[in-house]
Amino acid sequence: MTALIALFWRDLRRAWGSGALWLPVLFFLLVATAFPFAVGPDAPLLRRAGGGMLWVAALLAALLPIDRLVRPDKDAGVLDQLAVRGFADEVVAAVKIAAHAIGFGLPLMIALFPASALLAQDASRVELLATGIAIAIPALASLAVLSASLTANHKGGSAIGGLLVLPLAVPMLIFGAGMLDPSGRGAIKLLAATSLLLTMIGPFAAGAALRGLRE
Picture (tube, rainbow, N blue to C red):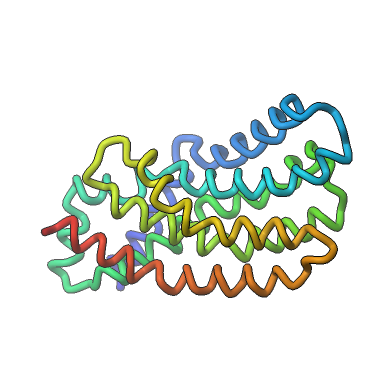
């Protein structure tokens, strides 16, 4: 148990070290700043399209650190040592998912509010965005760790990883954006169900991928 706690805190320090804490914040703000230049200063259009753009940005923010989620531990032999000590790969994957959810999730929620203001989102839409993204963060973290586990043996795995998780993330993007429609408030239940399913499956799928790295 001590080794797993140490792994959690080390992953969290890695996520927030060397200025990485602010990476999701800067990414969100860059997206929110650049998007109005692409669609023009039309406030109603920004209000309609901005929420969906923020959901896409949240997915990409979760995938930004894929290269450092699993590969450094694989190269350093940490995963092998944990396996020798008898820790199940699924448990190791769950610890990494929890650390990643906190590591990128907290800065993401902080960045959401100024980014929403830049995209002309009113208070009610910001509340829905914050609720939906908070629900989705564990699932996004699960997909990121799964992708990192599958691509740890490949250089440039972040590009491949994005292609791997995109089909799995599409339902969350659909339901998350659907929450913003006045006629789609039931989408929050579908989003919660999808997030719960991906969060439950994530450690088992990532654990199987971690075992594959040793074979």
